[in-house]
Amino acid sequence: MQRGIRKYFDLKYDYDEIKLRILQRLSRAQHKKNLRFLENIAQSDFIFPPIFIIGPPRSGSTLLYQLLTHRYKFAYLQNQMKPHNYSIAWFTRKHIDPSEKYYSDFKSEHGQTAKPNGPHEGGYFWRRFYPRRIHDYVFEHNLSPQEDFEIINTLKFLSHHFQAPFLSKNMEAGVRLRSIQQLFPKAVYVLVKRDPRAVASSLLNVRLDIYGSKETWWSIRPKEYEELSKLPYYEQLAYQVAYIYKVNFEDIQDAGRLITVQYEDLCENPLATLEALKLELEKKGIGFKDNNPDIPPQFPLRKNFYFTSEELKRIESIFKETGILENVPFVLE
Image (cartoon, rainbow, N blue to C red; front, side, top):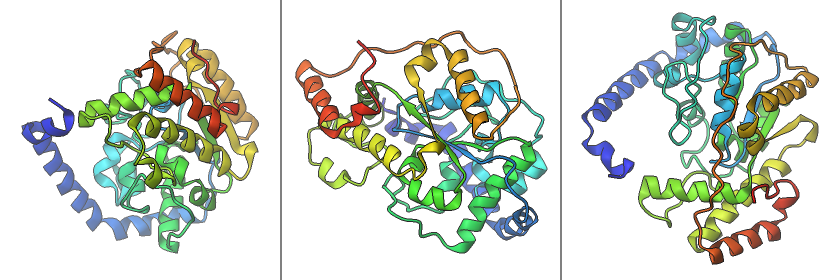
């Protein structure tokens, strides 16, 4: 039974959803208290510039997020913060021990991890400030001064509380870069590159898993979405991947603040890839401590593309036409 249907017949899901809604209402009631609390941190500076992991969905960003938060000490939005989306700083100060370490099992479902202190994309937080049509491209920064204040100082508080750089993995940030850079002009961006054919193939699998359909769009909508929605599903997937990568590169104003990580390298040699990334971040003034030296020596790498030969030929031609292969080449044979 598809996940989207199954949840309506799952008593545990119903209980968890009711509990979540109650806690979110309580969090909303604490919102003003949380804002007053953030005033205490507003006059201080970030310990380090925040780091944003970006790229298209299914590019391998969750694995990178898990590896970084498992091996090194970072501040990040955690699963247990989700019910407290209006009072994250207040909740964190009272209930989360900054010395507690996160040990990942390196499992996830569509980007979601399981443990209470596991890393979360933080949609519960970011969607309070950005359009409710959450996956759409954001053309400009138009948040209110209070919204700016709350976003900036929530991330700043987390960095101070955990005494570590703030790390975010939220793929929607990649289509909000014009706004994110207004909020955090010194932020650093880690772009996950993966063979774009594999990204498109993985996106297809998610469509089938969630909707049982190849035709139903899932996740981020680039600015060309309206035209793309009229195309055959395999062309939609190719353009979705190409245009998200394209805007990831084009919307970052300072190319010196962008670091790239190749997903295939991360799977084949995670330790070497992480250490290389750590060195690049240190060059940009971001240092961090080791948390847990033990990580798996390798991760399985899927090399199959779930398209017909004709569909794959068309997908490859789209990647060539859009020019994305100059920055994100084919690497799988």
